Amino acid sequence: MAKLTAGKRKALPKGEFAGPHKSYPVPDKSHAANAKARASQAVNAGRMSSSTEAKIDAKANKVLGGKTTPVKTDRGTFHMKENRGATTGKPSRGKAAF
Image (cartoon, rainbow, N blue to C red; front, top):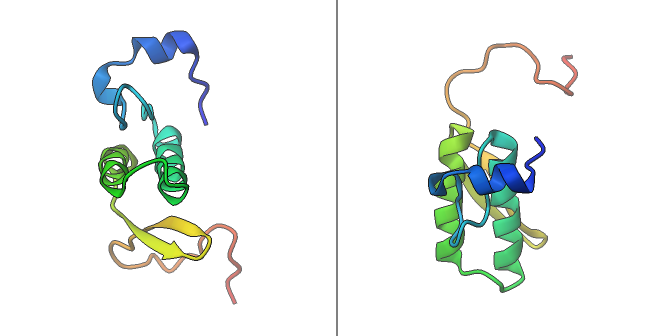
């Protein structure tokens, strides 16, 4: 994740935040993914409503450039990227081709 200093955070416009009261900054993809994960944790811990999480997710999805689907498990909520389009036939990183 890119370093976001206090000065850089203060300089971000209001539109660069996904949460209420300038919380959950999403200036780049790594911060957007992190905002989704932290919001999910907050909902699972009872500190945030599902509607607030949905707003954070929607803003983060715009930064991430795609739609994700929440998958609820006994270990929490995870966001899986939806498959869009045909595969290229090339193996994904980290997966061996047999």
